[in-house]
Amino acid sequence: MNREDFPMLKEKYIYFNNAATSFKPIEVINEINDYYTKYNSNINRGIDSLSYYSTNKYEEVRNKVANFINANNNEIVFTRGTTDSINLLAYFLEDIINENDEIIISIIEHHSNFVPWQKLCKRKKAKLIVLDVEKNGTISPSLLKNNINTNTKIVALNHVSNTMGATNNIKELSNIIHKYNALFIVDGAQAISNIKIDVKDLEVDFYAFSGHKMYGPTGIGILYGKKQLLDNMEPISYGGEMIDSVSIDNTTYKDTPYKFEAGTMMISSVLGLGKAIDYINKIGIINMHNYVVNLRKYLIKQLQNIYNINIYNEQNEDSSIVLFNINNIHSHDIGSLLDKYNIIVRAGHHCCEPFMKYLKVDSTVRISLSFYNTKEEIDKLIEILMKAGDYINELF
Amino acid sequence: MNYSNDLYRNIILDHIENPKNKKEINSQEYLKSYLKNPACGDDVLIYVLIDKDIIKDVSYDVNGCTVCKASTSIMSELLIGKTLKEVDIIINNINNMLVGKDFDKNIIKDAIAFEGIKNLPPRIKCAILPYKAFKKAIGDKDEL
Ligand SMILES: Cc1ncc(COP(=O)(O)O)c(C=O)c1O
Image (cartoon, rainbow over all chains, first blue to last red; front, side, top):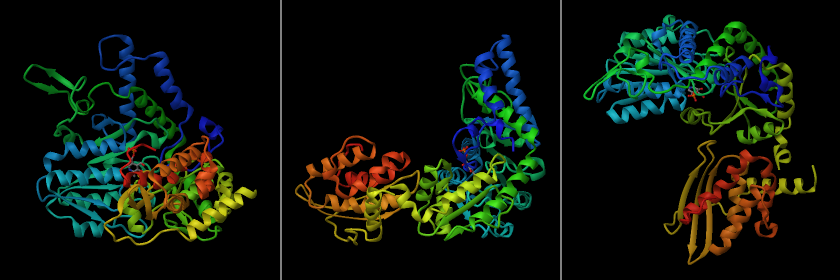
Protein backbone atom coordinates (compact mmCIF):
# COMPACT_ATOMS: atom_id res chain seq x y z
CA MET A 1 0.00 0.00 0.00
CA ASN A 2 1.08 3.58 -0.70
CA ARG A 3 4.70 2.72 -1.36
CA GLU A 4 5.25 5.85 -3.42
CA ASP A 5 4.85 7.95 -0.25
CA PHE A 6 8.13 6.66 1.19
CA PRO A 7 11.45 7.83 -0.31
CA MET A 8 13.32 4.98 1.46
CA LEU A 9 11.27 2.46 -0.51
CA LYS A 10 12.97 3.69 -3.67
CA GLU A 11 16.29 2.49 -2.26
CA LYS A 12 17.57 -1.04 -2.81
CA TYR A 13 16.42 -2.44 0.53
CA ILE A 14 13.67 -4.77 1.57
CA TYR A 15 12.88 -3.53 5.03
CA PHE A 16 11.44 -5.90 7.63
CA ASN A 17 12.61 -4.10 10.75
CA ASN A 18 9.66 -1.81 11.27
CA ALA A 19 9.39 -2.59 14.97
CA ALA A 20 12.82 -1.01 15.42
CA THR A 21 11.93 2.10 13.47
CA SER A 22 9.61 2.72 10.55
CA PHE A 23 10.31 4.55 7.31
CA LYS A 24 9.00 8.12 7.01
CA PRO A 25 6.54 9.38 4.42
CA ILE A 26 7.56 12.41 2.38
CA GLU A 27 5.08 14.67 4.21
CA VAL A 28 7.01 14.15 7.44
CA ILE A 29 10.35 14.87 5.80
CA ASN A 30 8.99 17.97 4.05
CA GLU A 31 7.55 19.32 7.27
CA ILE A 32 10.94 19.18 8.97
CA ASN A 33 12.54 20.78 5.94
CA ASP A 34 9.94 23.55 5.89
CA TYR A 35 10.56 24.39 9.50
CA TYR A 36 14.26 24.90 8.91
CA THR A 37 13.88 26.66 5.58
CA LYS A 38 10.74 28.78 6.04
CA TYR A 39 10.02 29.62 9.66
CA ASN A 40 13.02 28.58 11.74
CA SER A 41 12.50 30.10 15.19
CA ASN A 42 12.31 29.20 18.84
CA ILE A 43 8.94 28.63 20.47
CA ASN A 44 7.32 30.43 23.41
CA ARG A 45 9.94 33.16 23.22
CA GLY A 46 9.34 36.81 22.58
CA ILE A 47 6.62 38.41 20.55
CA ASP A 48 7.86 38.15 16.99
CA SER A 49 5.66 36.67 14.30
CA LEU A 50 8.04 33.82 13.43
CA SER A 51 8.07 32.54 16.96
CA TYR A 52 4.34 33.03 17.19
CA TYR A 53 3.84 30.89 14.09
CA SER A 54 6.06 28.02 15.19
CA THR A 55 4.64 28.06 18.71
CA ASN A 56 1.19 27.62 17.24
CA LYS A 57 2.34 24.79 15.00
CA TYR A 58 4.03 23.11 17.96
CA GLU A 59 0.94 23.32 20.12
CA GLU A 60 -1.21 22.11 17.24
CA VAL A 61 0.78 18.88 17.33
CA ARG A 62 0.00 18.46 21.02
CA ASN A 63 -3.63 18.69 19.98
CA LYS A 64 -3.18 16.07 17.27
CA VAL A 65 -1.46 13.69 19.66
CA ALA A 66 -4.20 14.20 22.24
CA ASN A 67 -6.91 13.46 19.68
CA PHE A 68 -4.98 10.49 18.36
CA ILE A 69 -5.08 8.72 21.74
CA ASN A 70 -8.24 10.37 23.13
CA ALA A 71 -6.49 12.40 25.81
CA ASN A 72 -6.66 16.08 26.73
CA ASN A 73 -4.04 18.55 25.48
CA ASN A 74 -2.64 19.21 28.91
CA GLU A 75 -2.02 15.50 29.45
CA ILE A 76 0.54 15.23 26.63
CA VAL A 77 4.22 15.74 27.50
CA PHE A 78 6.81 15.79 24.71
CA THR A 79 9.87 13.66 25.46
CA ARG A 80 12.73 12.08 23.50
CA GLY A 81 10.97 8.75 23.13
CA THR A 82 9.49 5.80 25.00
CA THR A 83 12.71 5.21 26.91
CA ASP A 84 12.87 8.82 27.98
CA SER A 85 9.20 8.86 29.00
CA ILE A 86 9.59 5.80 31.22
CA ASN A 87 12.86 6.98 32.75
CA LEU A 88 11.34 10.36 33.54
CA LEU A 89 8.42 8.62 35.23
CA ALA A 90 10.74 6.50 37.32
CA TYR A 91 12.11 9.79 38.76
CA PHE A 92 8.82 11.67 38.90
CA LEU A 93 7.30 8.83 40.92
CA GLU A 94 10.24 8.35 43.25
CA ASP A 95 8.45 10.17 46.06
CA ILE A 96 5.61 7.67 46.23
CA ILE A 97 7.92 4.68 46.64
CA ASN A 98 9.05 3.66 50.11
CA GLU A 99 11.05 0.81 51.53
CA ASN A 100 9.25 -2.53 51.07
CA ASP A 101 6.83 -1.16 48.51
CA GLU A 102 6.48 -3.27 45.41
CA ILE A 103 6.72 -2.57 41.70
CA ILE A 104 5.43 -5.15 39.23
CA ILE A 105 6.81 -5.62 35.72
CA SER A 106 7.05 -8.69 33.47
CA ILE A 107 9.84 -10.85 32.09
CA ILE A 108 9.02 -9.80 28.53
CA GLU A 109 9.48 -6.04 29.04
CA HIS A 110 11.88 -4.16 26.80
CA HIS A 111 14.97 -3.09 28.77
CA SER A 112 13.56 0.42 28.76
CA ASN A 113 10.56 -0.72 30.81
CA PHE A 114 12.68 -3.01 32.95
CA VAL A 115 15.86 -1.28 34.04
CA PRO A 116 14.31 2.06 35.19
CA TRP A 117 12.10 0.12 37.65
CA GLN A 118 14.89 -2.20 38.73
CA LYS A 119 17.01 0.88 39.51
CA LEU A 120 14.18 2.70 41.27
CA CYS A 121 13.66 -0.34 43.49
CA LYS A 122 17.38 -0.39 44.31
CA ARG A 123 17.36 3.33 45.17
CA LYS A 124 14.35 2.99 47.44
CA LYS A 125 14.90 -0.54 48.79
CA ALA A 126 11.61 -1.52 47.23
CA LYS A 127 10.81 -4.93 45.79
CA LEU A 128 10.73 -5.64 42.07
CA ILE A 129 8.23 -8.36 41.14
CA VAL A 130 8.81 -9.81 37.67
CA LEU A 131 5.84 -11.70 36.26
CA ASP A 132 6.28 -14.62 33.87
CA VAL A 133 4.26 -14.58 30.68
CA GLU A 134 1.92 -17.04 29.01
CA LYS A 135 3.14 -19.15 26.11
CA ASN A 136 1.95 -16.54 23.62
CA GLY A 137 3.79 -13.76 25.46
CA THR A 138 0.82 -12.12 27.22
CA ILE A 139 0.54 -11.31 30.89
CA SER A 140 -2.17 -13.32 32.56
CA PRO A 141 -4.62 -11.26 34.63
CA SER A 142 -4.92 -14.06 37.15
CA LEU A 143 -1.15 -14.15 37.65
CA LEU A 144 -1.24 -10.40 38.23
CA LYS A 145 -4.04 -10.91 40.76
CA ASN A 146 -1.89 -13.41 42.63
CA ASN A 147 1.03 -11.01 42.81
CA ILE A 148 -0.53 -7.65 43.45
CA ASN A 149 -1.20 -6.49 47.01
CA THR A 150 -1.56 -3.34 49.06
CA ASN A 151 2.20 -2.74 48.94
CA THR A 152 2.11 -2.57 45.14
CA LYS A 153 2.57 1.05 44.09
CA ILE A 154 3.36 0.76 40.38
CA VAL A 155 2.63 -1.78 37.66
CA ALA A 156 4.52 -1.18 34.40
CA LEU A 157 3.72 -3.44 31.45
CA ASN A 158 3.88 -3.45 27.68
CA HIS A 159 0.77 -3.09 25.56
CA VAL A 160 2.25 -5.05 22.63
CA SER A 161 5.49 -7.00 23.05
CA ASN A 162 8.37 -6.19 20.71
CA THR A 163 9.43 -9.84 20.59
CA MET A 164 6.31 -11.99 20.67
CA GLY A 165 4.01 -9.32 19.24
CA ALA A 166 1.31 -10.36 21.71
CA THR A 167 -1.29 -7.79 22.75
CA ASN A 168 -2.13 -7.54 26.43
CA ASN A 169 -5.65 -7.00 27.69
CA ILE A 170 -4.85 -3.61 29.17
CA LYS A 171 -8.37 -2.85 30.33
CA GLU A 172 -8.68 -6.03 32.31
CA LEU A 173 -5.23 -5.56 33.86
CA SER A 174 -6.11 -1.97 34.63
CA ASN A 175 -9.21 -3.00 36.57
CA ILE A 176 -7.17 -5.27 38.79
CA ILE A 177 -4.45 -2.69 39.34
CA HIS A 178 -6.81 0.12 40.28
CA LYS A 179 -8.58 -2.02 42.85
CA TYR A 180 -5.28 -1.82 44.73
CA ASN A 181 -4.82 1.89 44.05
CA ALA A 182 -1.57 1.22 42.24
CA LEU A 183 -0.52 3.24 39.18
CA PHE A 184 -0.61 1.56 35.80
CA ILE A 185 2.11 2.59 33.35
CA VAL A 186 1.90 1.19 29.85
CA ASP A 187 4.74 0.93 27.33
CA GLY A 188 2.91 1.55 24.07
CA ALA A 189 5.97 1.66 21.78
CA GLN A 190 4.78 -1.27 19.66
CA ALA A 191 1.05 -0.71 20.00
CA ILE A 192 0.87 2.84 18.76
CA SER A 193 1.39 2.05 15.07
CA ASN A 194 -0.70 -1.11 15.11
CA ILE A 195 -3.86 -0.55 17.09
CA LYS A 196 -6.18 2.34 17.81
CA ILE A 197 -5.31 3.67 21.24
CA ASP A 198 -7.88 5.25 23.52
CA VAL A 199 -6.27 5.99 26.87
CA LYS A 200 -9.59 6.80 28.51
CA ASP A 201 -11.11 3.54 27.45
CA LEU A 202 -8.00 1.61 28.51
CA GLU A 203 -8.12 3.41 31.87
CA VAL A 204 -4.35 3.65 32.13
CA ASP A 205 -2.57 6.24 34.27
CA PHE A 206 0.44 6.73 31.99
CA TYR A 207 1.12 5.71 28.41
CA ALA A 208 4.49 6.05 26.66
CA PHE A 209 5.42 5.84 22.98
CA SER A 210 7.93 6.97 20.33
CA GLY A 211 7.38 9.02 17.19
CA HIS A 212 9.93 7.14 15.11
CA LYS A 213 8.03 3.84 15.31
CA MET A 214 4.87 5.49 13.94
CA TYR A 215 6.28 6.96 10.71
CA GLY A 216 7.51 10.08 12.51
CA PRO A 217 11.00 11.42 13.19
CA THR A 218 13.49 10.25 15.79
CA GLY A 219 14.01 12.33 18.90
CA ILE A 220 10.35 12.75 19.80
CA GLY A 221 8.23 10.67 22.12
CA ILE A 222 5.14 11.09 24.20
CA LEU A 223 4.37 10.68 27.83
CA TYR A 224 0.65 10.68 28.40
CA GLY A 225 -0.40 11.07 32.04
CA LYS A 226 -3.70 11.77 33.73
CA LYS A 227 -3.83 15.49 34.42
CA GLN A 228 -4.19 15.20 38.14
CA LEU A 229 -1.24 12.82 38.39
CA LEU A 230 0.98 15.05 36.27
CA ASP A 231 -0.05 18.06 38.37
CA ASN A 232 1.20 16.33 41.49
CA MET A 233 4.59 15.43 40.07
CA GLU A 234 7.72 17.53 40.51
CA PRO A 235 9.76 18.18 37.35
CA ILE A 236 13.33 16.91 37.31
CA SER A 237 14.71 19.26 34.72
CA TYR A 238 14.72 23.01 35.29
CA GLY A 239 15.43 25.93 33.01
CA GLY A 240 13.89 28.09 30.33
CA GLU A 241 10.24 27.89 29.36
CA MET A 242 9.14 25.65 32.21
CA ILE A 243 9.11 28.40 34.83
CA ASP A 244 6.30 30.64 35.88
CA SER A 245 8.45 33.09 37.79
CA VAL A 246 11.94 33.08 39.23
CA SER A 247 13.31 35.11 42.11
CA ILE A 248 16.60 34.76 43.93
CA ASP A 249 15.05 32.49 46.54
CA ASN A 250 12.28 30.71 44.76
CA THR A 251 10.83 29.47 41.50
CA THR A 252 7.32 28.59 40.49
CA TYR A 253 6.54 26.46 37.48
CA LYS A 254 4.16 26.70 34.61
CA ASP A 255 1.21 24.35 34.54
CA THR A 256 1.21 20.78 33.29
CA PRO A 257 2.50 19.80 30.75
CA TYR A 258 4.82 22.81 30.23
CA LYS A 259 6.60 22.36 33.53
CA PHE A 260 8.04 19.13 32.13
CA GLU A 261 9.43 20.69 28.97
CA ALA A 262 12.49 22.63 30.06
CA GLY A 263 14.76 24.33 27.56
CA THR A 264 14.51 24.37 23.78
CA MET A 265 12.62 21.27 22.73
CA MET A 266 13.08 19.20 19.54
CA ILE A 267 10.76 21.48 17.63
CA SER A 268 11.34 20.00 14.17
CA SER A 269 10.69 16.48 15.42
CA VAL A 270 7.47 17.55 17.11
CA LEU A 271 6.29 19.10 13.85
CA GLY A 272 7.26 15.97 11.93
CA LEU A 273 5.27 13.86 14.38
CA GLY A 274 2.22 15.98 13.65
CA LYS A 275 2.49 15.05 9.99
CA ALA A 276 3.01 11.39 10.84
CA ILE A 277 -0.27 11.42 12.75
CA ASP A 278 -2.01 13.12 9.81
CA TYR A 279 -0.57 10.43 7.59
CA ILE A 280 -1.79 7.55 9.76
CA ASN A 281 -5.23 9.15 9.98
CA LYS A 282 -5.32 9.53 6.22
CA ILE A 283 -4.60 5.85 5.53
CA GLY A 284 -6.50 4.66 8.60
CA ILE A 285 -4.83 2.64 11.33
CA ILE A 286 -7.43 -0.11 10.96
CA ASN A 287 -6.63 -0.43 7.24
CA MET A 288 -2.92 -0.59 8.02
CA HIS A 289 -3.55 -3.22 10.66
CA ASN A 290 -5.77 -5.40 8.49
CA TYR A 291 -3.28 -5.31 5.66
CA VAL A 292 -0.43 -6.35 7.95
CA VAL A 293 -2.44 -9.19 9.51
CA ASN A 294 -3.15 -10.60 6.06
CA LEU A 295 0.44 -10.23 4.95
CA ARG A 296 1.60 -11.98 8.10
CA LYS A 297 -0.61 -14.97 7.29
CA TYR A 298 1.18 -15.25 3.97
CA LEU A 299 4.58 -14.85 5.64
CA ILE A 300 3.87 -17.61 8.16
CA LYS A 301 2.68 -19.97 5.44
CA GLN A 302 5.84 -19.38 3.40
CA LEU A 303 8.19 -19.61 6.39
CA GLN A 304 6.82 -23.03 7.18
CA ASN A 305 8.56 -24.28 4.04
CA ILE A 306 11.96 -23.47 5.50
CA TYR A 307 13.79 -26.54 6.70
CA ASN A 308 14.41 -26.65 10.46
CA ILE A 309 12.64 -23.40 11.24
CA ASN A 310 11.28 -22.79 14.71
CA ILE A 311 8.68 -20.01 14.90
CA TYR A 312 8.03 -18.80 18.44
CA ASN A 313 4.88 -16.74 18.00
CA GLU A 314 2.87 -18.23 15.19
CA GLN A 315 -0.32 -18.01 17.23
CA ASN A 316 -0.22 -14.22 17.58
CA GLU A 317 -2.14 -13.63 14.40
CA ASP A 318 -3.00 -10.03 15.18
CA SER A 319 0.62 -9.01 15.34
CA SER A 320 3.04 -7.49 12.85
CA ILE A 321 5.92 -9.54 14.26
CA VAL A 322 7.28 -13.00 13.52
CA LEU A 323 10.02 -14.33 15.78
CA PHE A 324 12.05 -17.38 14.77
CA ASN A 325 15.29 -19.29 14.63
CA ILE A 326 16.59 -21.81 12.17
CA ASN A 327 18.04 -24.70 14.13
CA ASN A 328 21.81 -24.75 14.41
CA ILE A 329 22.27 -21.40 12.70
CA HIS A 330 22.90 -18.35 14.85
CA SER A 331 20.50 -15.47 14.27
CA HIS A 332 23.39 -13.15 13.34
CA ASP A 333 24.41 -15.46 10.56
CA ILE A 334 20.86 -15.40 9.20
CA GLY A 335 20.88 -11.62 9.59
CA SER A 336 24.16 -11.29 7.69
CA LEU A 337 23.00 -13.62 4.95
CA LEU A 338 19.85 -11.56 4.41
CA ASP A 339 21.84 -8.34 4.66
CA LYS A 340 23.99 -9.51 1.78
CA TYR A 341 20.82 -9.42 -0.32
CA ASN A 342 19.76 -6.06 1.14
CA ILE A 343 17.02 -7.61 3.25
CA ILE A 344 16.94 -5.97 6.64
CA VAL A 345 15.66 -7.90 9.66
CA ARG A 346 16.53 -7.73 13.33
CA ALA A 347 18.78 -10.43 14.76
CA GLY A 348 19.79 -10.51 18.39
CA HIS A 349 18.17 -10.18 21.79
CA HIS A 350 15.89 -7.24 20.85
CA CYS A 351 16.66 -5.43 24.11
CA CYS A 352 14.85 -8.26 25.93
CA GLU A 353 17.64 -10.29 27.51
CA PRO A 354 15.50 -11.53 30.42
CA PHE A 355 12.90 -12.84 27.99
CA MET A 356 15.50 -14.48 25.73
CA LYS A 357 16.77 -16.37 28.78
CA TYR A 358 13.18 -17.33 29.52
CA LEU A 359 12.80 -18.69 25.96
CA LYS A 360 16.13 -20.49 26.54
CA VAL A 361 17.75 -18.94 23.48
CA ASP A 362 20.42 -16.27 23.31
CA SER A 363 19.03 -14.57 20.28
CA THR A 364 16.36 -14.79 17.60
CA VAL A 365 15.53 -13.40 14.17
CA ARG A 366 12.64 -10.95 14.08
CA ILE A 367 10.63 -9.88 11.06
CA SER A 368 8.33 -6.94 11.67
CA LEU A 369 5.95 -5.89 8.93
CA SER A 370 4.44 -2.60 7.93
CA PHE A 371 1.59 -1.77 5.58
CA TYR A 372 4.12 -0.90 2.85
CA ASN A 373 5.63 -4.39 2.75
CA THR A 374 4.49 -6.73 -0.03
CA LYS A 375 4.10 -10.41 -0.86
CA GLU A 376 6.85 -10.01 -3.46
CA GLU A 377 9.23 -8.87 -0.74
CA ILE A 378 8.30 -11.91 1.33
CA ASP A 379 8.94 -14.18 -1.66
CA LYS A 380 12.43 -12.73 -1.97
CA LEU A 381 13.03 -13.25 1.74
CA ILE A 382 11.97 -16.88 1.49
CA GLU A 383 14.18 -17.44 -1.53
CA ILE A 384 17.21 -16.33 0.49
CA LEU A 385 16.18 -18.19 3.65
CA MET A 386 16.06 -21.36 1.56
CA LYS A 387 19.84 -20.96 1.27
CA ALA A 388 20.27 -20.63 5.01
CA GLY A 389 21.84 -24.08 5.33
CA ASP A 390 24.60 -22.85 3.03
CA TYR A 391 25.25 -19.63 4.86
CA ILE A 392 28.92 -20.28 5.38
CA ASN A 393 29.44 -20.55 1.63
CA GLU A 394 27.38 -17.49 1.08
CA LEU A 395 29.13 -15.34 3.64
CA PHE A 396 32.79 -16.31 3.57
CA MET B 1 31.68 -20.76 -5.17
CA ASN B 2 35.39 -20.43 -5.93
CA TYR B 3 38.44 -22.18 -4.59
CA SER B 4 39.08 -19.79 -1.72
CA ASN B 5 35.44 -19.85 -0.63
CA ASP B 6 35.61 -23.57 -0.37
CA LEU B 7 38.81 -23.41 1.59
CA TYR B 8 37.50 -20.73 3.94
CA ARG B 9 34.31 -22.64 4.47
CA ASN B 10 36.24 -25.75 5.48
CA ILE B 11 38.42 -23.83 7.89
CA ILE B 12 35.43 -22.23 9.59
CA LEU B 13 33.44 -25.45 9.73
CA ASP B 14 36.40 -27.27 11.23
CA HIS B 15 36.78 -24.71 14.02
CA ILE B 16 33.03 -24.76 14.70
CA GLU B 17 32.75 -28.53 14.77
CA ASN B 18 36.07 -29.17 16.54
CA PRO B 19 36.94 -26.12 18.62
CA LYS B 20 40.68 -26.12 19.31
CA ASN B 21 42.27 -25.83 22.74
CA LYS B 22 38.90 -25.53 24.46
CA LYS B 23 38.98 -27.17 27.87
CA GLU B 24 37.90 -26.66 31.40
CA ILE B 25 40.30 -24.46 33.37
CA ASN B 26 40.38 -24.60 37.15
CA SER B 27 43.93 -23.47 37.74
CA GLN B 28 44.41 -20.13 39.44
CA GLU B 29 47.51 -19.48 37.35
CA TYR B 30 45.48 -18.47 34.32
CA LEU B 31 44.64 -14.86 33.59
CA LYS B 32 40.96 -14.50 32.83
CA SER B 33 38.72 -12.03 31.16
CA TYR B 34 35.11 -11.90 30.09
CA LEU B 35 33.80 -9.69 27.32
CA LYS B 36 30.38 -9.32 25.89
CA ASN B 37 29.19 -7.57 22.83
CA PRO B 38 26.23 -5.65 24.23
CA ALA B 39 24.73 -5.00 20.82
CA CYS B 40 24.31 -8.63 19.86
CA GLY B 41 24.92 -10.73 22.95
CA ASP B 42 28.00 -12.65 21.79
CA ASP B 43 30.21 -13.35 24.78
CA VAL B 44 33.63 -14.87 25.40
CA LEU B 45 35.49 -15.90 28.49
CA ILE B 46 39.21 -16.17 27.75
CA TYR B 47 41.85 -17.93 29.84
CA VAL B 48 45.51 -17.18 29.22
CA LEU B 49 48.54 -18.81 30.81
CA ILE B 50 51.73 -16.78 30.49
CA ASP B 51 55.21 -17.78 31.48
CA LYS B 52 57.64 -14.86 31.39
CA ASP B 53 56.67 -13.41 28.03
CA ILE B 54 55.47 -16.57 26.34
CA ILE B 55 51.84 -17.55 25.90
CA LYS B 56 51.79 -21.09 27.25
CA ASP B 57 48.09 -21.74 26.84
CA VAL B 58 44.82 -20.18 25.74
CA SER B 59 41.39 -21.58 26.45
CA TYR B 60 37.89 -20.14 26.31
CA ASP B 61 34.18 -20.44 26.63
CA VAL B 62 32.21 -18.72 23.89
CA ASN B 63 28.54 -18.17 23.07
CA GLY B 64 27.53 -16.52 19.89
CA CYS B 65 27.54 -16.61 16.14
CA THR B 66 29.71 -18.61 13.79
CA VAL B 67 32.12 -15.74 13.29
CA CYS B 68 32.73 -15.23 16.98
CA LYS B 69 33.05 -18.92 17.77
CA ALA B 70 35.39 -19.78 14.89
CA SER B 71 37.45 -16.65 15.47
CA THR B 72 38.02 -17.61 19.10
CA SER B 73 39.16 -21.12 18.23
CA ILE B 74 41.47 -19.80 15.50
CA MET B 75 42.92 -17.25 17.90
CA SER B 76 43.83 -19.92 20.42
CA GLU B 77 45.80 -21.82 17.79
CA LEU B 78 47.54 -18.71 16.58
CA LEU B 79 48.65 -17.37 19.94
CA ILE B 80 49.78 -20.41 21.90
CA GLY B 81 53.57 -20.59 21.99
CA LYS B 82 54.09 -17.01 20.85
CA THR B 83 55.89 -14.23 22.68
CA LEU B 84 53.94 -11.14 23.65
CA LYS B 85 55.73 -9.26 20.92
CA GLU B 86 54.73 -11.80 18.30
CA VAL B 87 51.18 -11.77 19.61
CA ASP B 88 51.04 -8.04 19.07
CA ILE B 89 52.11 -8.41 15.45
CA ILE B 90 49.60 -11.21 14.79
CA ILE B 91 46.69 -9.29 16.30
CA ASN B 92 47.57 -6.14 14.40
CA ASN B 93 47.67 -8.05 11.13
CA ILE B 94 44.30 -9.66 11.81
CA ASN B 95 42.80 -6.34 12.73
CA ASN B 96 44.15 -4.84 9.51
CA MET B 97 42.65 -7.65 7.46
CA LEU B 98 39.23 -7.23 9.09
CA VAL B 99 39.08 -3.53 8.38
CA GLY B 100 40.40 -3.93 4.82
CA LYS B 101 43.97 -2.72 5.29
CA ASP B 102 47.22 -4.42 4.20
CA PHE B 103 48.24 -7.51 6.15
CA ASP B 104 50.69 -10.37 5.97
CA LYS B 105 48.92 -13.57 5.00
CA ASN B 106 51.68 -15.80 6.36
CA ILE B 107 51.35 -14.48 9.87
CA ILE B 108 47.66 -15.03 10.39
CA LYS B 109 47.22 -18.66 9.22
CA ASP B 110 43.59 -19.90 9.54
CA ALA B 111 42.32 -16.42 10.32
CA ILE B 112 42.54 -15.81 6.59
CA ALA B 113 39.12 -17.48 6.43
CA PHE B 114 37.74 -14.14 7.67
CA GLU B 115 39.17 -12.14 4.81
CA GLY B 116 35.61 -11.58 3.59
CA ILE B 117 34.55 -9.90 6.81
CA LYS B 118 35.77 -6.58 5.43
CA ASN B 119 32.72 -6.78 3.18
CA LEU B 120 30.44 -7.46 6.16
CA PRO B 121 31.29 -4.47 8.36
CA PRO B 122 28.57 -5.17 10.96
CA ARG B 123 30.35 -8.46 11.70
CA ILE B 124 33.85 -7.09 12.35
CA LYS B 125 32.96 -6.80 16.01
CA CYS B 126 32.13 -10.53 16.18
CA ALA B 127 35.52 -11.55 14.78
CA ILE B 128 37.47 -9.12 16.93
CA LEU B 129 35.76 -9.89 20.25
CA PRO B 130 38.08 -12.74 21.34
CA TYR B 131 41.16 -10.63 20.56
CA LYS B 132 39.78 -7.81 22.66
CA ALA B 133 39.13 -10.25 25.48
CA PHE B 134 42.64 -11.66 25.14
CA LYS B 135 44.17 -8.19 25.35
CA LYS B 136 42.08 -7.43 28.39
CA ALA B 137 43.20 -10.67 30.06
CA ILE B 138 46.88 -9.82 29.65
CA GLY B 139 46.32 -6.23 30.76
CA ASP B 140 47.10 -4.69 27.38
CA LYS B 141 45.21 -1.43 27.28
CA ASP B 142 45.80 -0.61 23.61
CA GLU B 143 42.47 -0.27 21.83
CA LEU B 144 41.60 -2.55 18.95
C1 LIG C 1 8.24 -2.44 23.53
C2 LIG C 1 9.27 -1.35 23.42
N1 LIG C 1 9.45 -0.51 24.44
C3 LIG C 1 10.34 0.48 24.39
C4 LIG C 1 11.12 0.71 23.28
C5 LIG C 1 12.10 1.82 23.28
O1 LIG C 1 11.77 2.80 22.37
P1 LIG C 1 12.76 4.02 22.08
O2 LIG C 1 14.07 3.42 21.73
O3 LIG C 1 12.14 4.72 20.94
O4 LIG C 1 12.83 4.84 23.30
C6 LIG C 1 10.97 -0.14 22.19
C7 LIG C 1 11.82 0.04 21.01
O5 LIG C 1 12.47 -0.82 20.51
C8 LIG C 1 10.03 -1.18 22.26
O6 LIG C 1 9.86 -2.02 21.24
